[in-house]
Image 1 (tube, rainbow, N blue to C red):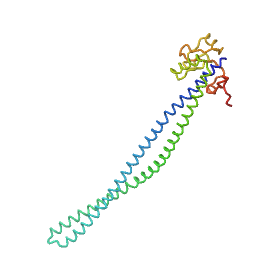
Image 2: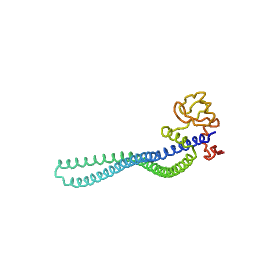
Image 3: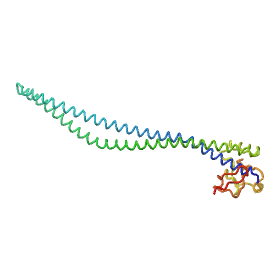
Length: 255
């Protein structure tokens, strides 16, 4: 068997692995951006809840001030009432006192209403803050993992490209050039034809073509999709990704 046929399979495996790593490297920043976007939306939600709670507390404080103002005014009015010169003046003072007392009652009712609203608001804010703190920790952890993964993937890509360069150097230039031309156009340049059909385009291959292919002496291209096709009964979905010894052209037993 021509060892370069095994090498094109290994070359395809290396290129597939490189592409997967490059996609992952590109996807990691998007993943981090999505995490940060979600976190930012949660931060804004907590800030909005805090603002509602703060407004509630501000309103309660204002109601307390209004009550004190009314109470102080009532004290003054009652002092003035004692000096009323006639019944009309007395009634006028009493009317103002009644108005202030009504104001106090409204403020007290409003305070009760605000207190009833503030309890679930306060609980919700505290729960949201706790959840946000955990989410921030998780996001920081995932960002650190993404940075570490990126460095690991970049190192792997560099190693694979070096291995690929060494592998191409062992191949016949014509076969290597054919592979490179196909690979520039197609993500998958090598297809399995063991079952009499191109695994890439799924087109059935001619009997004579299969007979020539089975000899595994030369490079053959699918007559439909123009990918390199190989015949190897020992190839399975598992062994397709098994490394090859680039010197001998034989697959490495990883068991």
